[in-house]
Image (cartoon, rainbow, N blue to C red; front, side, top):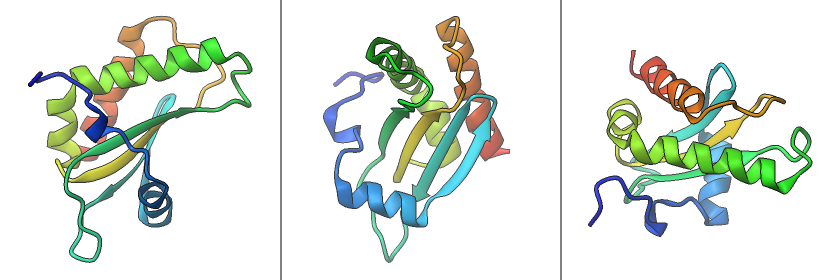
Length: 123
């Protein structure tokens, strides 16, 4: 098993989980990155971490641009899983959003914002 993988069991896909996330989740923002997360509770147990990504069609009309940003968001999560788990825990539902109208210049910009988001939650 790969340490830095992003297997399908970690992908947020079920409508019921997404509805729960938007109904009970908490929002957190740093620069151009926003997250909604929901940690496991007795009433709503979650077996593992699941995360999804989304980019607004309103800001990015071209699918290639949206897909690039989504790839960058998934990659920043994949490479910084340990930081994410320290901040949010291993039994969470989360969804990342890119809220800027500008395309990120480099992957390092997205990764830096993701790490800052995790630090903001932790500290």
